[in-house]
Image (tube, rainbow, N blue to C red):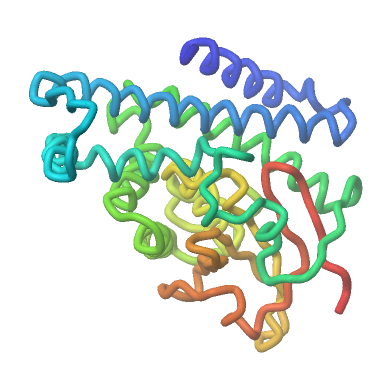
Length: 294
């Protein structure tokens, strides 16, 4: 299955790079890109699950079957025999693969948290921003395939990939808000502010510079690579009312709140705390949605 997913992702990236998707309707391109993102995340989830299963299997000799009428002390001893880190790794994995009826009760349905900064949004099917995001998602998909293909290569062969993935690996030593905060700070420190065009996540890692767009896209992809489910990550265009300019940030849903990853701030803020930001549009694997003019 893993090889089939990798082959599909590679084929989609090649088709996008050759411009063969340019003639497709916007909705069709969105579905293809969304499927590719979903398969790429599934591939990572399967690899994580395989590691957990192998780790459990290596320690199965130490785990004795419980009697049917086991008491709490025997249950405690059984749980204590689980390899260190196994539970934490499963907890990182499970939010990415639970959906629908299988999602724990404490996680709200997607519809109840799908709008960082609150308010209603309207789906866009055409316009300059839709075209920009479609082209950028092609670049992101190509970068994600490169990340996958560089997994077996050396640092010298893919320095920009290793730079990003090292930050992701360090962030994954934490959980929850700490993971998101580590990723925000690491990418803020890795990129020097400079005006650039719309680009995928690897270009700013390679050249070491970029503007708010580069920071946001790198954090968006970094969050997905760190195991954040796609429905829990967004790129948001805002209007900075204090400085009278447009700005871009990444939003990640964690523990019933949207956290804002901003290149202008090393600290994580909730969306409700960023009072100077007026949301304009939200971008994700599904497409582009705009906020009504306030």
